[in-house]
Length: 272
Image 1 (spheres, rainbow, N blue to C red):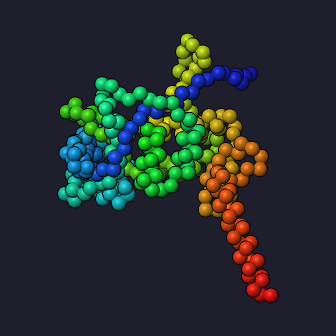
Image 2: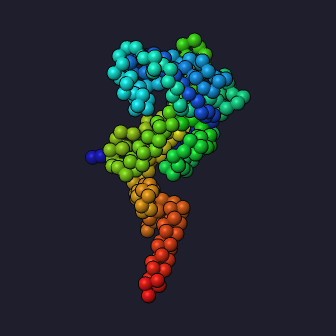
Image 3: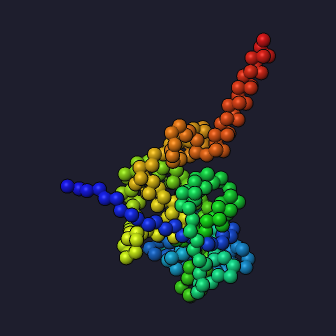
């Protein structure tokens, strides 16, 4: 007969600081059977020419903007001159000033649930995204400097669109089936001698967000959809009767309701 055990588990969320800069890259050639591409930095000027040709920092073709991805998939083994001279805008990821590969910045603990809430409510603007990333640090495994084939450290690179796609992914996950999510995104526990004897570490923002969802689903936390019509963000229903994902949304709905009632009242007065 199966038994359900309640085990003490430690989950650590510690994120490495990363500095993000608006920049541009140009594609160079295919790597790894045409699934990844090497690139060079074209902007900003002080970093122009740095070449990334290693697998751990190359751009996967599926991460490219759709308008760039489609022609490349038809191009075959060689990139066209147009593809190699087009500047692709994104974010360069470097260690904060004063840090180097031999003295990495010290990770700092974060609240994964606050991180997730801030991410879900993040406005679609470059300025808002940069502010969010500088606050929390390393977004994913690819947003750290990496070493190229010449043993030179080059910045990581990510398209903003990749992060916005993850925002939609997280929203859909919180609206989906908990069992299917846990089966797909369960995490590994590492045994150790000290208490608690099982731990899990998340070292980047994306992993921390995914793990926070897993923990909530394991705890059977109920989620609702914000009733503000133009929001629709899922939120943890931590108390009965809560209808909005944030105080801001509740305020917006209240203001709109008051204005609508005042408008109807003025219309009724005019008609009489």
